[in-house]
Length: 536
Image 1 (cartoon, one colour):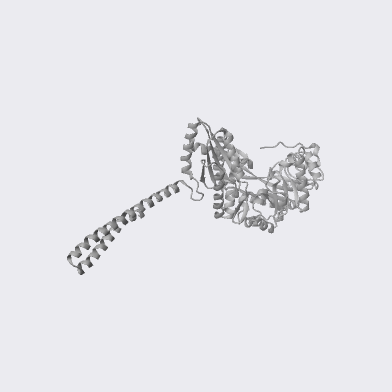
Image 2 (cartoon, one colour):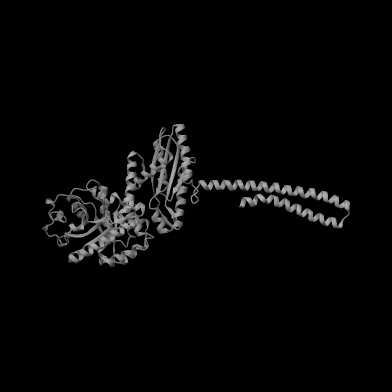
């Protein structure tokens, strides 16, 4: 419609000029002599005709320029992402086809990097979409600055980006680009006055001369291996044939998880935490299991990463919270000693950034009848550090009487200086990796000693995870760690294995009836106990 109006404008200019000429000549006819009128008529007719033609020519030229710029802008918008200014998905595949043809002709290496931001959904949900959009723009700028000018950077969709590295000499060159991008992410990001660290996982596909894969195949393979990088927290991973099978399995897992939630296929297992010095059961950690209809009982390592990536973790987490609280309340009714036993439950980041989570916990406690002081919510160290200024829900949870513990302490990005800010936290759990290498690594022993000393100064309890032999028990006791968890005491078991009449008693000696479950025997009769074999 706009172009039609522009096309008519030159004619309108000429018509207006002619109309003004006729009106002027009419006046001359009425006041002047005939010869004079003829002379004026001829001169003015030529003048207005020339002026009209000139105006028409000027307007036509402006219209042509305007239309060209308009078309160029429309073409640019069709190939670029509006938010970041990067190539969009359709332009990406066009550019990738050209790059593949060029690499084949020059017999060089082509690299495709598929990048996904870690925990973007959490940032978007907790800080708002404006902050999420600003983060995407910052990421786009850092990506452009990290690659060569003739490489291609595109926004694939959401928080996913693709980088095409043209005409490289070797596989090492592709990996070097990925490392350069990851280094660019190390610089903190400021979002509306809050400083935070953004991170990414990168999947890499490398195409050598003669590679038959199409553009779609290269992007698909890079996408598939990106999930391995995310799962292993390795920063990047390079695709090989085995990853294709993993990608298929992941898609199957995602599809089956949807059905599992509908059919409530999840179970909760309980692993004991033992206070070795006091010779009593300190508590349980509730651990989710998936009773898959065809694959059997699956551990959390086989599906939780997919649940987090797809946003299903909050639903699963709520079900675990409900069942564990209800089970602890049942044990309270069956044994008076159970009231001194804690119930620890892992809480995902997606749950914590939900403003309604404290209300949900309060509702579940009221529904189950479990006293708040028996409930311990375990939060990963990185999650607490990343949201230290924004996790007001931690204080709301503490106001309910619920205890908070930092899980896998020492493996995240915090330092001991952060811990003094964790005034709402009551316990630190030393990660299994430190316990595993405690006997052979002096640095690990030093870290454990430092954590224990700092925790005592701040009046925090320390819990050691992954205890698997008697020597570890002895060393941990020497360090001042009394509460332990691991396969030496017991593997995670279903609720019906736990006998309330015996499990919650203080162990002065090896009690009768516990030969099958082993709990607490490790420190009452250590010589007679064999550690159960670890299961995957």
